[in-house]
Image (cartoon, rainbow, N blue to C red; front, side, top):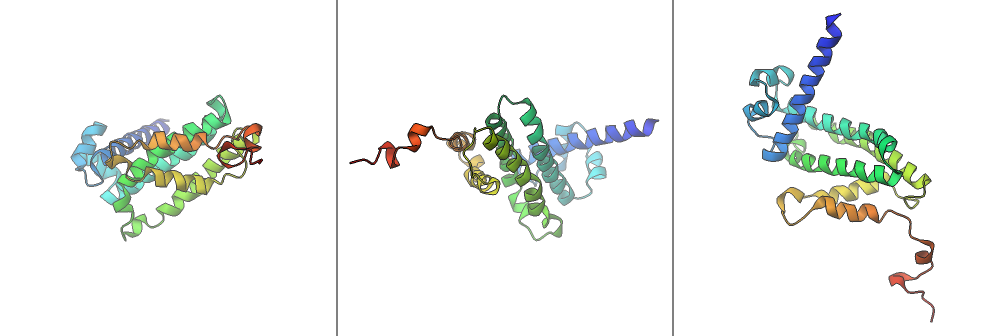
Length: 202
């Protein structure tokens, strides 16, 4: 009877390690000493090596952990948010947080190490459908203009997040917020106007 609880405890311990490693990577890069990660997690260095024998194993696990958390948040946000657009905006906040960490891992993930080669496909397979699900709900509710494509939206957000951690005068979250506000349908009166808000009549 004790085995299921032991497995649950082991999963919680691993989640704690992954959260601590992710925070350490953001703060100091993927070459941060393992002892610093252990200190954040409140465990010994040996505990980390038992779970993740190599640094590559840890990097991949952090990446997958964050992808899964972001993907699994989408349906929960649709249940809890006041509307579909709000759910989409809150999910994109999580996605931006993920992207900041992902760019912190970029050098490692772009290496020739075979351990990393499938991660980009995994990222797309898990997160594009999550974004598409939220977009579909918001479009059906009339809260997002029709025709917005999940992949294009995510790629655009990714471009807005590049370098965000290196420029203290640039707030990627605020700029992405402008983009999300722009997804709302235009009022009918605006649609009748020409470019620049003029009717185009002479």
